[in-house]
Image (cartoon, rainbow, N blue to C red; front, side, top):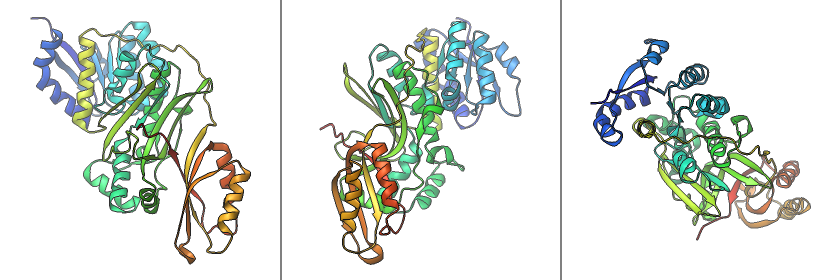
Length: 407
C-alpha cells in the first residue's frame, strides 16, 4: 500500500468540519480513483495547532479559515514550500490572486479554488479546463444564494426586505452579519475570479463595480410581475469595446431568460462564446456539505495529477460606460402634464420609453417605466434632471433590465 497523502486543514468552522467528515467518509473512494489515500495531518483553529508544524508534516494544504491577512500568509508559505493548496476563500483570491498564482507557478504546484465560486457548480473547472482556449465573450449569473433567496421570497410573499432577511437568517441562508451578501461584495469577489479566468486578465476586486439589494421594495417586485419580469442580483463579466466590464447589480429578467426561474438559495452561471453559443449550469450555491464537496473535488484533481496553470495573457482595460435597459419607478404628483414633462427630459438625453404603467391617484400616484437600451451615462443624467422636478414626491428608483430571452 502506498504511503497516505497527508492533508493539513486550516480552519474548522462549518465548512472545515464538513470537509473533515467527508474526507474520512470518502477516503476509500478517493484512493480507488487516484491510487492515493488521503488522511488529515492536522487541523489549525484559532485556539489550537501550529501552522508551521502542520505544514511540515503535510503534503497538501486545505485553507478554510476565511479572511485575508492570515490566510494570505499561510497560503503563500504553503505554496513557496512546494505544497499544493486548495482554498474556498473568494476574498483572498479576488484581492491577491496575482501574487498567489505567481507563487504557485514559481513552485510548480497547484492552487485550486472551485469552492470559492458558486458552491457545488463546477464553473471554475469548466472555464479553466473545458474552455481554457476558448475566447469567452461573457460570463454572468446568480452567484450569491443569500440574495437570490431574499429576492425570491420577496417576490412570492410580498414581504419587505427586512422581514425576509430575518427569515433568511433564521433558516441559515444568511449570516448574522449579512453585509457582504446584501451589498453585492460577496458576488463581486466571485466575479473578479471568474473574469480573471475567462479573460486571462489581472482583474482584482477593486475593479468590480457592485450594487446590492437593500433598496429593493415590494412594489418594485409587484410591478415587475405585471411586466413579466423577475428580479435577480446578477454578476456580469463581459468583453466590451476592446476592454472588459465586470459588475454586480440587481437586474430584471424576462421569463424567457434561462436564469429567470432560478429561485431560492440556488446559483446559476452562464458562459457565452462564439464557439459554444451558451452554456448554463445551476445548483446549490452555499452550505457546508456542498462547499466541502467542491473542496474535496479539488483535492481529488490534485491527487489525480491534473494541473491547469492559470496565466495572464491580456491586460485588458476596464470599460466603465455601457448600454443597458432599465426599470424606472417614479412617485409623482397627480396633476396634468407630469408624464409629458418626464418623457421630455428622457428624450432630451436620448433615452426612450419601451412601456409605461400608471397606478394610483393623489398621494399614491406612480409611473413605472421600462426604458429601451441606452448608455448608462445618459440614463443617469436624465434621472438627475428628473429628480429635480417639483412633480416628484421621492427620489427615482431604477433597476437594470436584461432584454435577452434565449427563446
